[in-house]
Image (cartoon, rainbow, N blue to C red; front, side):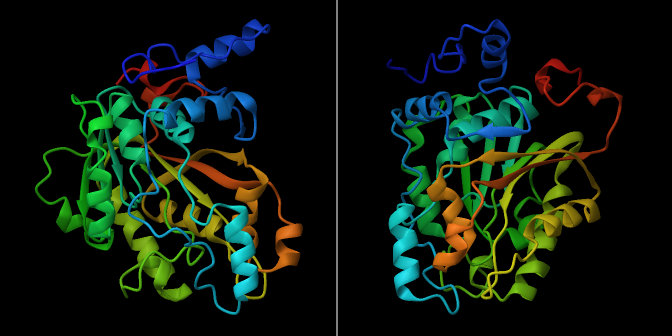
Length: 320
């Protein structure tokens, strides 16, 4: 079934179902907003293929084999094996973007992404009739993203800025409005190393990563309107001994310090290769990895009566 950018969003239920309840959830939410999002399932994969047929190339601007290229003490053989199992470089899932922006922001919202990476979050947000500002450290990544602007909605052109989100306060000093949604996927420490720059989080020591990561979260949250959400896609990583570092609780604590309360979270049931990504650089860690790996966290700034309804209601139905 072919789709074009003009009709893909007007009919979000494309799958059909004998179960009226499930069909209605697809109609309303793209994917049922349960606590486990099944990225392995046929419906999710079908939706993903529809997005990719629009021509989104989020991998542009990055090297082909980023995964475990510089993880300390991992053997070249282990890194090569995992890169082969995962296509070598992670690409953000467009269906996850669609769900996040439609569930947690109204139309015409401003979405702020301090770790923009590839083009997919900007393009999907644009085609979902939201404004998007994404910041990425690497100029070549930003230029690659801008080369795909023709795919986006001309009425909601995404904006990509080359800069370091550690300085987001200065980057945003002349902005006329605050964000209605913070939506991002930060580096999972050194799982993928994007550059050899000293100010690149993926190239830092763990203590320096923690400090800069917390600072970016706090400064970004200061740019968020009250009674709005931050949606953060994060997963765990392991240290050189195979032990979990605690990136997820580190993230929750950072948002709390920034004044945002944890409203809800969910996990994505990932394809096996994707779970191997975060398991660790040794064969034993990959074999014992869970397929339920990515944490899909929502934090809320300024809880109030305007957001009394359940998380499974679309945010645009609430009064603002």
